[in-house]
Length: 205
Length: 306
Image (cartoon, rainbow over all chains, first blue to last red; front, side, top):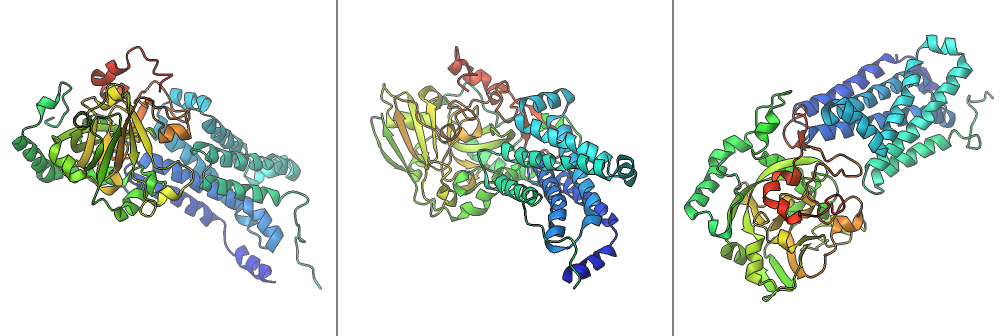
């Protein structure tokens, strides 16, 4: 089986470079914007690029389980790192908006209350906080596997809200956010009980 | 300061030719150092925005960051695609409630209309802003030449419709051609300009070559690009963004920090080219032209007529 060979190779890779690459990607975007390489409106461009990158990382996280079910390839070892990188990226997206765009706590609250797409985006971010806070092995032990897994089902509303946030902030129904939403729905649909589930392990003959 | 627009300007105050030529030389030569070489980038210098406020935006920024949906969506699309647009020959048709309807060639208009340099602030409805030295003539002069009939109350404008060169016009999302409109007193206001150039050069195609409207106290989408037709009417004309989303884009679209767009606040703006850490600057009523234009809207509820 190819999946076996791939998994054997993946087992030899440590997960920590994912953190380094994730943080470097954020730093690179901030550096590009600060050094004038992101066009004349760098605040808006950086905000959008970090948001888009964070959503892509969330999609990658949510693709790990269906990928394992459908192909047998397991990236499970990298899921925690990838998910935390997504949280960092979204936090950077929020920080750019708060510190460089709206600038100020009163404007921050006003915008969250007044603009539905910001309310939705903030809800997604707040739901990510307990997930990031319980990402350690110690937390899993403390909560028990079942309790931990139930809490982490919050990742489904998180990615749905993120997709809705993207659709809402664009004018009308635009192709790009709808494409992301379709990908989100597909990844979630693959988790439904009636969706195709090949055996987790290849059978031995 | 020498470019700053004076509000008491009338058609009689036409810039003497030698000054005009000197100004153009100043922009083209000396101004190149000042304007185009870029400002020193000092992060966290909050006061820079104020200094920059009436300093022209860098030419590269003003010409690479544009909304010109005829070429597609995205700020840099027009600067990449607009090269294909044929702008010679170019005619502007003036019709409707005028005494002398007809087609005017661009060359004719540039020759006959008194040309002026105007340094204007430009505020996009999306929250970004710039400062542009335009060259052009007052729309009022053109309308006087055409002879506005007394029953005319509005001026309607149309952009060129040529999907073969403007691929964005294949999108079914909008009703083409792009349309805009002004109330007659707005159209006749001395600030209202038909621009044929910027930064001492002919208007770049992505900025609406060869001739566009510039209404500095209104959001940028009112300043229609690549104009081919001006029609005087007695009814408020339909306008593109208002047709698409009437709750988001009003007919008047005056810059107003107190009336938010449904999806964002209009209280502040980001000045193009001011860098990542410059911070937002407060948006001014009528984009800072309150003294000149507020009287046009006396007694009007600007929340209702946004």
